[in-house]
Length: 247
Image 1 (tube, helix red, strand yellow):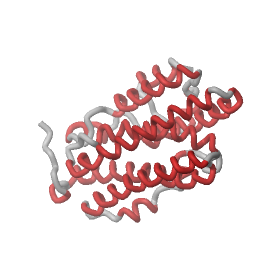
Image 2: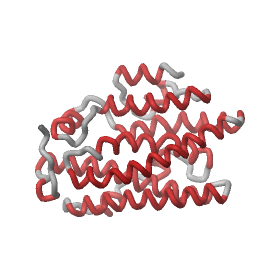
Image 3: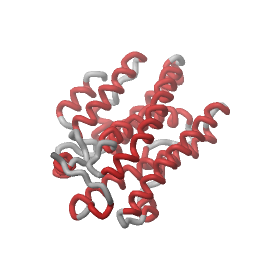
Image 4: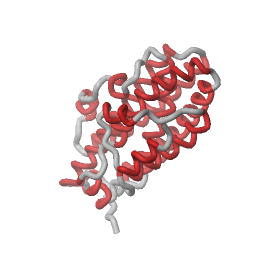
């Protein structure tokens, strides 16, 4: 039976260190995503898209602010943590001036985040777990829009060709940023103390299998293994099998 940690005062030692490490990864992703959506308002081709991105920006900022509060409760300086993050475009490997990149980002990145948040909402650190339900609901809506955007691009041969080029660059980097490395001691510790319920490989494979279901129907394939290798992505054998099954 995994012990529940119900306050910042109870989070100590190695547990606290790992909790801050995981929250740092999440706040990097949330703040970078907020900045992507905010800056993408300019690139959006229609007023409807601009409005949608403005709403998404606000939601990502609120997600980030929730983490700011949690980190401060743990005695950390969120501003210093965020300042150490690479610029948003570099972090997610996208060009913030290109609508194609924003469309790919919407399809790829939000769902990657959702699969991690599915873990965090059941975390043994209950202040974090309790805050993640609304975050996951927002991300589900974002991903639904990403699927619609994918289908829209797939209807135009020229635009879809550009989508594929961007996808092959963005997905490997998103996998690296969102999921980390398989089979390390950190992952085993998170499972043991209940900070996560599933292994790195299980979470990543769940994400890729879900992506595959939408991709195959429109003729979108996974990037070649060389693209993942170039991005520094480490994969377990089962993960490689999923990627190679839709090339």
